[in-house]
Amino acid sequence: MKFGGTSVADLDRIRNAARKVKREVEKGYEVAVVVSAMAGKTNELVGLVRKAAATEGEGESSFYDAREYDAVVASGEQVTAGLMSIVLQEMGVPARSWQGWQVPILTNASHGAARIEEIRTEALERKFAEGLHAVVAGFQGLGPDGRITTLGRGGSDTSAVALAAALGAERCDIYTDVDGVYTTDPRITKKARKLERIAYEEMLELASLGAKVLQTRSVELAMRYKVRLQVLSSFSDEPGTLVCDEEEIMESRAVSGIAYVRDEAKLTLISVADRPGVAAAIFGPLAEAGVNVDMIVQNISEEGRTDMTFSCSVDDVPKAMKALQEARARGAINYRDLVADTEVSKVSVVGIGMRSHAGVAARMFKALADEGVNIKVITTSEIKVSVLVDRKYMELAVQALHDAFDLDKTADRLEG
Image (tube, rainbow, N blue to C red; front, side, top):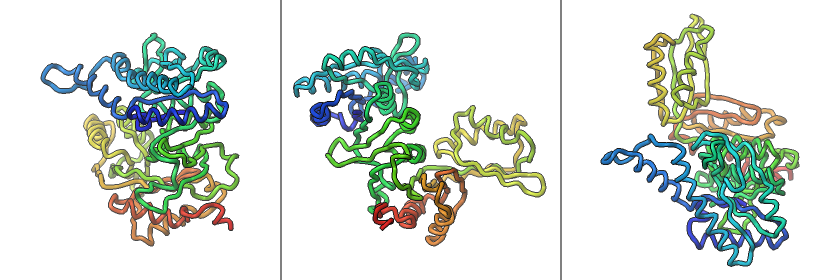
């Protein structure tokens, strides 16, 4: 059972979470609880590190010892784990807290963004045999140099899934401030419906496309080790959404969800020489600059020139422009013009049923055309179709596609 920052934001919420743990204990389960830092605590600790690293009078600095950063930032989860254990003990549930290094959760040496390499569960399992339940500090592990590491963004979800896999858990319950995975963002359309089940691949696509319910790394781990994930609300007893293997879903719909990324940008290099190695010459400097490129489209003219279009986050546009201009200045690439459109959004339809249902792309494009939404870029995969549209039409596009694929109806109603 994993509880995120909003679920353990204060003692009242920790007690609420502990009652959910007690309920599972009373069902006869051995429970491992993974906790995040209290809401806002990690940001506060990061701020302290940056202030400590700054020259006096400067305010904040982004340059600091990453090992000491981890030592400071990991303390947030340590506090929550200790408090959760105390509350559980007061409720009559025998529990003890574990920090990442005590388990141990062994990681590589990438401080601030470490990856889990091994979890040794022998000590945990001995305590389970003695009747103790475990409360583990998420987001942290032990590096090869014997120092605390942190796992980076989504680290507590990753800790929980990895621990579930190592222990052979029946499932991993992720408690958050939403009560499941929806067909799209309920803030955009009231017709959004909670899914009872969703396949790992679909959840992975939705997570990578901007759905904030689960982090991509944790879904990747769950899929690799076949850990059944359940997304639940900490603040209600409503049933959640089960993220599971495709084989556990009886009948796959063509489309399961509509995802979006609001703040995208489209960059086009106009009139680039069409020759071997030109793509590497363009995207190599972008990679070195830390620009995460998403959609890529190449149009080749009869004159042996090409236009290369790609999308990235709006925040990465200055880095991308600088990297490409510098590459042209040193003669690595030659293009006539570089055009940036920073007013676009990406909208995607996702569903494992696309493998067996024809016509999804045509239906998508017709729905957008009927609403007067112009498509700028298209990319597809086996279970996804993504388009770039003007940002001002993003919400309209999401609503139109949700209606076009009847996502407000249950599968039973559709089959009936």
